[in-house]
Structures are given as structure tokens and as C-alpha cells.
Image (cartoon, rainbow, N blue to C red):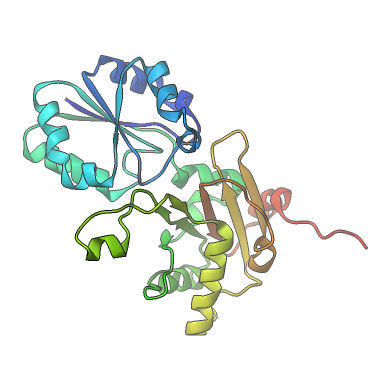
Length: 277
């Protein structure tokens, strides 16, 4: 059996009881470590904390392991119970869907144990979940690569009056372009996009297209470390959020569409207040 188990968003204790029971019954346990991370994923003792609570040695599965060496995971699952741990919910990333498809084609039984993800936890800001349009990803720009396919999706959402969740880029164990050109992989240090960087890139793309999909006055909600005790939620115009220090990752951004009075009332608790002169 291959168990694909959501870990939630906070710390090692956010796993469900059903998920914990499954982990403890497995012969081998992997934790996926590149589409997202728990708060302790940034600390030196993060993996040991997982192992101490779950009572199992855990292997870290990076992008290369999951996308290029999935057969290794599935070969274990064909003859024993294997747990594959995913931050958030198991199907928050298409990579995990691919793993399920491969398992089923090989005749490996799969059981999925769900958990909270950013896709539903964003409800805490007060914007109603059924009032969102298509979710977009904002990748890091480079000098030679500045993709902007997200612009049309945001524009379409805004035309329909819908909110847009922007998931911000995470680069973990990514080979540098220079090393790939040399034929030898050398990995860049981990990099996590901030809300400030995302807004700067969004405004750059708006300036390029000039179709008024949004502007520096557009109301947004910035969320950092969602699901953690020190989570941070700030609402306000893009230009005001640029000056906010959201602290450690992970960050995400919501571009607000048309709002209901109840949504506005909730957003008010997080809105930047102008100081009196």
C-alpha cells in the first residue's frame, strides 16, 4: 500500500490521527520537500522533530527523487506499506497526482489521507472561498526569463469580480543554469518569494501590458506562514503592502475582487490603518 498523507500547514502536530496511525504502520516513510514546507522545514531540527513524533526514520524526497526516481518509491510500495508525506493536502501539487497515476498503473494500492492546505486556509482573511477565480503561480523573474501568463488569468478573474490567489515561487534544490551548461549539477541555495517581490513583478507586468487588470491601488491581502502560530495577515492597496515586512516564508498573495459586505467587515480587521498626524 502507498499512503499519501497530508501534513497540514503548521508543525509536525498538524497531521491527523488517521494519518499518524498510517505513518506508524508503514515500513518506509518519505517526506516531500520542494512544493512547500512546514514552518520547521527552515530549522535544523525539522526532520528530527518529525521522526521523534512519528516514531519512524524519514527519507527526504526532493524534486529529483519524486519526478525522476518515483519507481524506487513505488517498488517499495509494491511489497510493503510506504508513506509519502506531503505538506498541506496531497493534491495541492500536480506532482502527487502523477505519483498516484504511476502507482495505479503498476497495480499498487493507494490510500489518500487529506489535510488542510493553503487553498482552504486562506478563508481566514474573510474572503469567501466560492468567490475565487483561477489560482495563479508567480515565478521568480530572471534577467532572461520573465513569464507573465498569469496576467490574463488575473485579468479574467477581475472582469468576473472574482478574487485571485497568487501562489509564490519556491526554489529548493534547483540546479543553477551555469552548472547545467557544464553538465554537472550544482544546486542553488533555497529561495522563497516574498509578497513584496511578487507585487513588484505584478506591477512590472501591468506596466508592460497596460490593460488595467490591476494597479498599485488594487486591494490585496498578504498572508505569511499561514496555519502557524505566528501567521501574519495584512490587507491594503498593493503600494502599501510593498512597505510591509512579512517576515519568514512561506508567503502568498490575494488580489481582491468585488466584495460582499460581510467580506469587507472581516477584511477590516486586517487592513492597514492610516496613522493620525
